[in-house]
Picture (cartoon, rainbow, N blue to C red):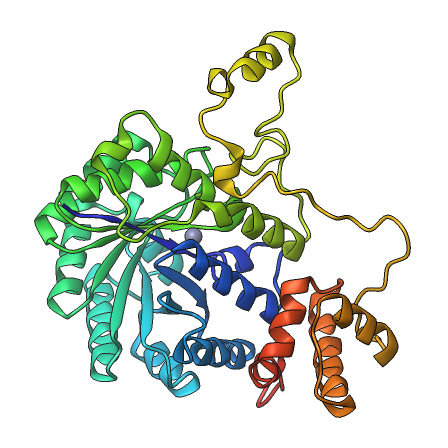
Length: 413
Ligand SMILES: [Zn+2]
């Protein structure tokens, strides 16, 4: 039986959202948490963007030394030979690439303005996939941007061509959130069956259906006999109205009526990591989690009205579909309400030693403490807010990798 895998695109789609961004250290921590959660791949960034190179290479180093294992780290590029070559030149260790190109008439005409035909798009994709293969890329995904507004016969040709040239996955992108669960099920099932290729499902929430469409699309892919790779973002953060929320997708597949009897994850998913991951991501993006967010919102397990409160006290299952502990909630949280010493870009050794001492992080000597303090200052320059305990631990444990991922030297600009 075909299975469902999760591909989280927070570090790609999430960070390209207007008004939002993440420091390179935050992106790294998110990769670590996604790995702990059982996510198959983090689409971790843009290998052709200069300021990403050191971060991407540092994370591939973490993969090599087993910190980011078994998660796959996929780079996002345009499906052109130029982008493939640039990606490999800038991030030589990269092994997983997702190649993206617009396939709808709207975008071919509206973006390329007559300079490209449908046949040109097929040729570009073919050449890019071949280039990726010739450079030994292990895992090649091909993304059809605006697939949902693409003529289905052309899309089938496109997906077949991707497969024939060695692509490992075909991504059906509902770039504008145009789909509904019934239509996406049908299209995905047909493509999976006729093209015989594992499929990614990438949905947006412009009509409020990103999670439902992702689940229905994945059902279609599996009923078509192929593995499905659902694209998610943490807290649903992404372009415009956002992407399919990671936790909501997991909850839907595990808890929705009858679904878990037929559709299964290909890797064990640790839902208990959800609370920490979502809180951290909210802090890093500097945007609150909506109170009505499934699973992790402040009201997800709150009951005020008489009948509900009475019912849930008698038996939680009266008014709750799942337990808060399943999401890693319920632990008391310490919030400092008095004096607080926190990290900053102008921190000194005394305050820093105090912070690290509280975390039981010890240094061999003063030189080592000074070195880590310097890295913490740099991390704060990017973060613009106090670092969290896990970040401080990370810096103290992997100073060389931290130095690499924080280094940004504008060159040839
Ligand atoms: Zn997107």
